[in-house]
Amino acid sequence: MTDQVQNEVRVSRKGAERWRAGHPWIFRSDITDPAGAQPGDTVRVLDARGQFIGQAHYSAASQIALRMLGRTSEPFDIAARIAAAQRFREKVVTDSTAYRLVYAEADFLPALIIDRYNDTFAVQTLNQSMDRATAEIVAALEAQFAPRAIIARNDSGVRSLENLPREVKMLSGELDGPVEIHMNGFRLEADLTHGQKTGVFLDQRENYLAAARFASGRALDCFTSTGGFALHLARTCNQVEAVDSSATALATAQRNAVANGVENIHFREADAFEVLAGYVSARKTFDTVVLDPPAFAKSRKQIEGAVRGYKEINLRGLRLLEPGGVLVTCSCSHHVSEAMLLEVVAEAALDCGKTVRVLERRTQAQDHPILLTVPETLYLKALILQVV
Image (cartoon, rainbow, N blue to C red; front, side, top):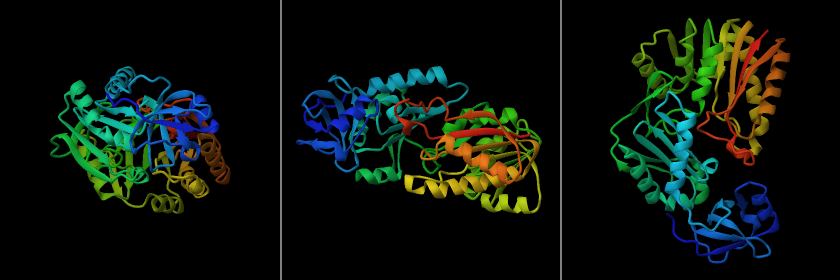
């Protein structure tokens, strides 16, 4: 349990109203009196009239100066909130030994990410307060799960905004290589030390199954990474071509295919944009195309360029599909909304003379819960479409 609250930070009317409207962030511009708050402190928060409105974690570096913890003065209990997060996952996660155990603000543990990979845990502490609470987080995980190992995957650029070092290090136990997990009936390899995200794209777990329900024939999986979509498509497609520019990711994908006895995937190291352009020029066609690119927009300033990028790859993807063909297209850019993605795909369809219907509109897996008043908790959009 964290230390008792000591300092009181006063915020503007605007900052207090933001919290009362359900959003847990108060920006530095709305701090009217930080008093003696120190980096990483848990503080009492007062409104402009001096009324207590809750407690928060204080950052002395980020523009997000306060991340609210709750509306009461009860001590902030990290272990209890991790336990509550696990109870929720027990209700929503099926057929997987890997899932997101803690999703920051969505689990009322701001700036804390914990991913579970079987009996090993990857932790990201993304602000000064959670970084200070690392020992408490580790103790809670050890008490509740008796893990084989806990690793800090603190290599995210967000840490730089908090004046925190970017690092990967062991917090508990030992890890001598990739971890084996089970997901949707597959044995998969997760590299918690060097892999993208914290090892595997856990947020697409449910979308993998949805895509496979509609996929058939010859499939093209662009930006395959460690082969998540490709492996699932291989169950329902005759042949899958999986493309990625990372040799390391493809090597893992190939090992995953071998481990599961999957032989109908051809892995290709190449730039997906160039592959799509080349296949369009060659008038090649597929029955299923999956587009799961990295985030094109990591800030609002990048939205215009991102929209152009999404339109271009969707235009190329649609041109490869005949009537009846299925397009699975994803965006993990928080700043690109579902409405924007739908509009981009609609424009691409018109440009190439295709009529498209929506089969499913999806988001991230349920172990990445979305808070209605915190739009930042929704970032992944996945559309399953059919050319008619």
